[in-house]
Amino acid sequence: MREPSATGPGAALARWAPLVAAAPILVATVLALREGWTPTSDQAGQVARIADVFTRRTPLVGPYSREGWSHPGPLVFWVTAPGYRLLGPAGIMATIGLVNAVSAATAVALARRVGGAALALAVTGGLLVAEAAIEAHGLVDVWNPYVGTIPLLVALLGLLAVAFGTDGALPVVVVAASWALQSHLGPVLVVLAATAATVAILAVRRHRPSGRWLAVAVGVGLLLWSGPIVDQLTADQGNLSAMVDYLRSPQELQDTSIALDVTADHLGIVPAWAGVGGAGSLAGDPRPWTLAVPVVGLLLAGLGARRLGDRRLGATVLVALVALVAAIGASTRIDFVQAAYLYRWTWAVGVLTWAVIATAAWRVVTGMVGAGTTRRVVPVLALGVVLVGVVVTGAVVADPDAVPLEGSSEAAADLLDQIPDGLPREGRYTVAVAGDQDLGAVATGLGVALDDAGYDIRFPPSFRDQMGDHRVTEDPSRQTLFVVATSTIDDRPPTPGATLLAVFDRLTPAERARIGELEDAVRDQVGLGPTDAVGALAFGRESLLRQGADRATMDALRDLAERGPRYTVWLSAPPPG
Image 1 (tube, rainbow, N blue to C red):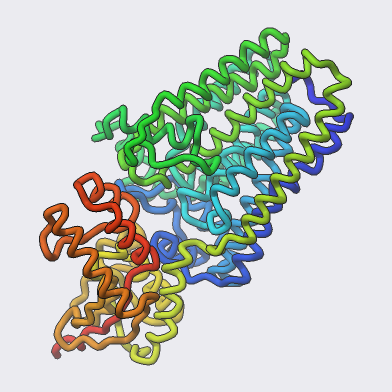
Image 2 (image 1 turned 45 degrees about the vertical axis):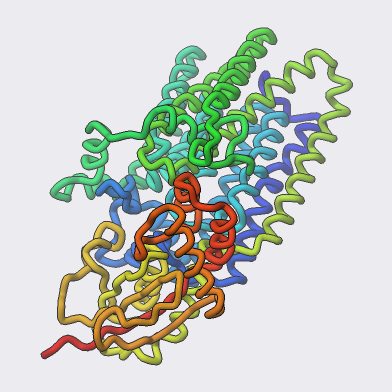
């Protein structure tokens, strides 16, 4: 992979590759805008913080985490705020779709700059496969574990471009890395390791980036990180300090073998980003050995580069290998392995890894077969990538879930249509979660939507990190808006005198009764109490199967539970006095 040529059939076809990579995302964005969206769950919490932008409560830190601190920065809030002000939640999806589309096109353009047509087509193919796995709704999702995946790939390819003398890529690296890191802390080790490898390459090449581009990059970085910097300087304990303290303190981690099993699902030979990963050890199929496959593949790619005398290819392999090893190391420190979303950022590293392996293999093969054969094969490969793009775009169009969390979004929208009839505008309300089937996803969405509609809405103190201090209260004089999610029909008021405002249920009464019968059967099979919750989906299901639950019973229960819980919304009686 010597200095990429700007001529030849491969280069000509690669010029169109950025558009091919971006096309499915643009289509997903248009479909999402046609669908409409009522945000729920964590996404609703992020919408609440986006609504704070341009006010005296403009967020200075990023989305909240489970560990008591927030992710590094508010860039995703700031960037999506104009779209939200113009179009509401639809504007957020439009902004995220545009960011991802531009990122995909930029990643391919940088790949072409780094490795010519071969790397550009390989990255395009990898991105298309990943986009299919992300699915239509994920391509427009503002959820912070998701939004940084494609920009992280841009940052890694931008570092490679800088390593090979494209100084103008420095601001691109800063923007892309800032977006990825401010949204989620996960990839920090990868970015630091890849940056160190880039500095080493520059030192070996004895190339110093131009002062002008360095100044621009530093200026852009200071602007993008101004929020966290101000927070660090003005808060009693800055968020950056809280994160550093957390990273330095001993953590109670999962067993290393389990962590490697799950990491293999995302970076091994059958990775989730290619749409073929599973639940690894959680499904009883451990395969940590598959992590060795991409590592060995890159080592062989490095040997091929050395044999060819191609230092550029060798340096590309080095950065990819460093990023992969750093990603594996960082992933094994994730303390909640059941949450696949925490590994989503690794998909960028996976795409880069296999794109570099494919490019190295191509270079070795072309060195063996000659230029004539290469010129005949490259157009065929390029057309194959285009065909993959057409297939992925078709899959996006066919995806029934065009918006994030479509099931709970539909439920929230339906409930919102019913609630105003019984909810006085002049009232003061606190949203409360009840039931064991929802974890507050729809309740959060309803509260945020009602707040946006002008109702005086607050949340319990447990929502402080997610919503901000100004949206929580313990005021007992407020009426409570209970959002109850149950697997069976249970219309008992959550408190005496509460009024039923709204009901949403995709199942018939007979189907709800059948769920009750199946849950009772599972309780008998595994020895649960009569009031113990039965997890019919995902990891709750896997746990019950391991405890001895009958698979046919669990399958029947899953088929019904997948259609969602029964939601009821109740308004408590006014407090006395």
